[in-house]
Amino acid sequence: MKVFKSFMLAMGLLSLSTTVCSQAFAHGTVCAVMYEDSNYSNHAYIIWGLNANSTYVGDSWNDKVSSVYVAPGCQLTLYQDSNYQGLPQTYTQSAAFVGSEFNDKASSFKCTCRY
Ligand SMILES: [Ca+2]
Image (cartoon, rainbow, N blue to C red; front, side):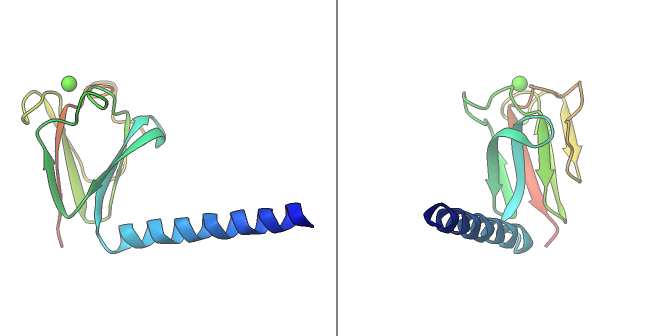
């Protein structure tokens, strides 16, 4: 019985966090999410706000991004070098894989939403 209660509590917390997460997306507070591996897996870098730029993703994220979630109405441009230099690639929708040309390359980004 105790195990069952813990399980129900865990499920409750899980659904709560899922709800909070979808609300953040629905309300447009998240522009995009970059993932370390393809298919939206491994570590996630959440890009908050409707208009968020970064001249450098930081040493722990440099040349690591492999997939991107893009919120509805938003677009994310990745650049292969810092300070928006190098080859750019714009994503208007989520991509389970950023493409072989862009895999493990992104160093800076610009993210904007239409609303
Ligand atoms: Ca790079």
